[in-house]
Image (spheres, rainbow, N blue to C red):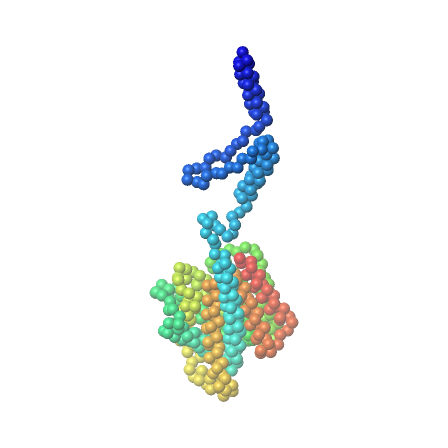
Length: 394
């Protein structure tokens, strides 16, 4: 009996203890077992009652959840990509800096060579007023330079075919007309006035594209033509040494260069020729086109008489002027075509606008061209309109 009572009492006590345990302790949810082959999970369980660690577990779980959410919300660090590879940030930054420096050198060289060419070209035309021969010598110098570069392998010769030269023919015709017309204008009027009128080239571009090619432009492009046309008109009316032949030469040059650009875009699609070699081929074909017309318009007799007179008045420096204007004409055009390989058309257009400003200012200073305030205002309006057009076109 006593043994039975003791047995009943112990079982009652065990049941009570189990009930107390069940009521006082919360279940512990352990993480799932790791997969086979992974690192075994190590657990450290304290000997203290679990209910005293509830706040510790809650804090740990909250921190782990916050850590997971932060990792999910935050982007991947820039030092690593999705596949674990590190991007070449350290190399890209110097490469971009080098590219911008290269473009800056192109622009500075382009503007400097253009200013030098215009100065020597005007000096030659003042002493030797034969623009057809002057234009021919410019193209001949460029052609000779590039042929020598190809022959000596200083520059790699382009791989061309018959289709290339067919596509280049209308471009060369327009380039020849534009070059001669601009030289005729420079022979008759001041350098600054020629470039003021040539700043109206965007107006010709829009009009030709609209009425002959059927292209449409947004309204800001058309509105940007108003200051260009108005500024050119104001500069022409107030020009002290206005000459109709010089004015028409600049206008024809604008139209010819617009047509050259249109044919160049249409005919050169898919042609893998660098900017330097493209302009070299253009110069060679333009020289072939221009030479017979130059002989017909002026002729060797006039050239010989004019040359003797210029040398007698200027001296040996005249020969240097002719050589300089011929070489610098090719160099500045070559650099401008090379820069097209590195920059966008918008950047090129802005650079061309800044080039005209540098030429106008330099020619006024060197040749001491008299400029009225109203004339300078017209030039500023036209150039500002050209800049606005380049922005609106994009």
